[in-house]
Amino acid sequence: MDNKVYIEVYLPAAGKSFDVQIPLSLKIWEIISLLSNAIAEFSDGCFSPSQQTTLCDRKTGAILNLNITAEELGIRNGSKLMMI
Image (tube, rainbow, N blue to C red; front, side, top):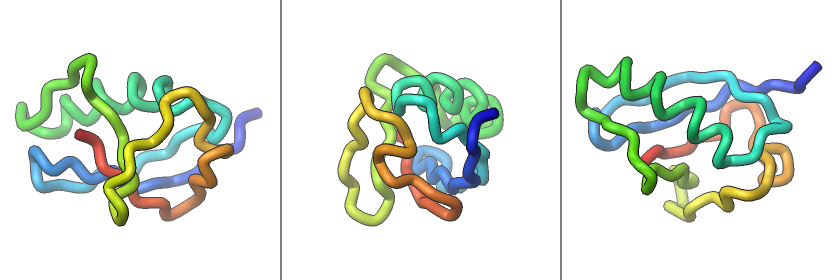
């Protein structure tokens, strides 16, 4: 059973934040794939996922490494990310 955490994903295009639960064992590219379609649906057309969609640390703006897991990045409950 995967360990999961709740994180906040901010979507600048919509000016909204979304609280989501993600498995720590997934690589960031897998998390982007999971989240982008769901967030596009909930953003009332303000966000359209593409090949360039990425996740960043909301505080620093640093782009997250696509090839490591959320756990390896130190993501935990309450982490704040941004999808662009």
